[in-house]
Length: 328
Image (cartoon, rainbow, N blue to C red; front, side, top):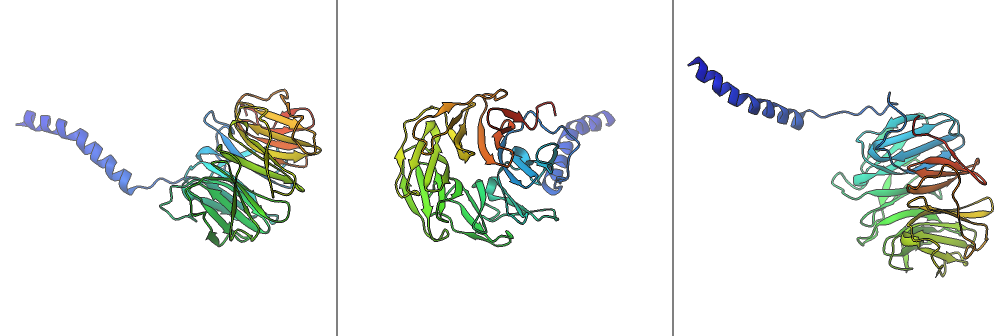
């Protein structure tokens, strides 16, 4: 009898363990500590997508909720992880120090100058759309993403309005234009333009490849995208023309800094041109220390152009100074 009971208990015990684990999975919710972590500053899995600067403060965001923070212009850093461990796709800051971070599943996080992070679900808790970019333009926060997602908030990021595009198109980035207008770089070679603060949009189709970023210097506009896509406007975006590709790599961002245009992208793509109208003169730029990974963001700072991707570095006139090294 005892041997039989022992045999049955041996058969049941694995199922009892599995059942208790299933109960825990359903009713015990894990928590995430958003405070600085006692761990290496960089991890092998890290990938970074965007950055922001305000005075001496720098913020860099990436996958798995990673947030790197510096209060001394990159001399020292600390690492935090926002609750949820979602991929963080974009970050923006207002002149008053209000921070907004956007990421996967329509989520965004807001932080005041003195307060902690609060999570918001501006697209609804069932959203599957990634929010890919956020910018502070004309005293408002703007966020864009998949499935035509477009959000606008006041300078305090308290009230978010959905102004989404009624079309299943990915909106990759939003930037200011030459005359206080708004521009969105989108997939399928589309540029969206608004002159009425986002209430209505006009669409220009520049090609078939996704556009990733647009930047204006006065009336000169440059849009870049996949497979080396490069488009130029000399009349504040009224018309655009295609510039022959100088690379086959995807181009993810473009900026103007101290007398030159700079573009970056996949597999170490980094090019510069000193032409005021950058139709020609593009040269491959390979400063010492640049690797062959992707770089998704170029951010102007007082010290130079911040290069964000697998590497985080500062581009000056001729070189790249890595702000964070792999063995940090």
